[in-house]
Amino acid sequence: MRISHVTRAKLERQLNRTCTVASSNHDPNALPPHADGGQRLAVIAQALYLCNLLVAPGLAFLALLWLWFKHKDSAPPLARQHLAQATFVSVMGGILIVCITVGLIAMGGLHWPWTWVVVITYFVCIHGVLVLMGMFALAKAMAGQPWRYPLIGPRSRP
Figure 1 (cartoon, helix red, strand yellow):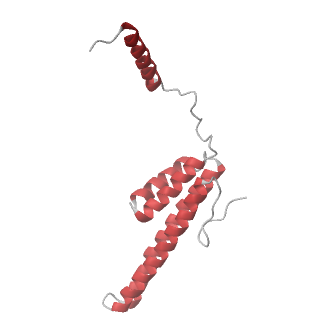
Figure 2 (tube, rainbow, N blue to C red; figure 1 turned 90 degrees about the vertical axis):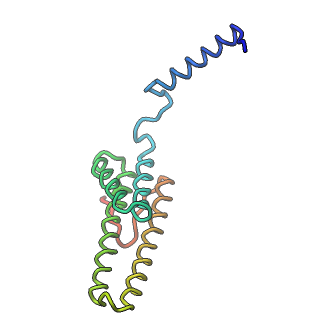
């Protein structure tokens, strides 16, 4: 198949423009970091909180901790608030689930069937509430609004 000289020139110009845009590190239309007021970072924090509860416990928590230590002083107020809430509630939720479950097993013994009924019921209820609150927090982060977890969320500094 033969391509005319004019068509070939057009294709080469288009290819050069595409390669130039793709290889350029500077996009004039790109927003500077934190131009969204920290909303993107807030969404990532709340998504990691939910991942810690549902998909990758421990691994997502470590990523959330790393994100907190990296951005706790430099993040915009919205992102800082969501990072603090997600990190603190991850720690408190872990303590609630592990310590109380161990306490219930210690009180009831491993071989008493009602111990397992109580432990599983407790775990499912607390875990379910933490997931539900995380979904609300993610929705608030996506809307660019602050959020405080009820009862166990840390109070915001004035």
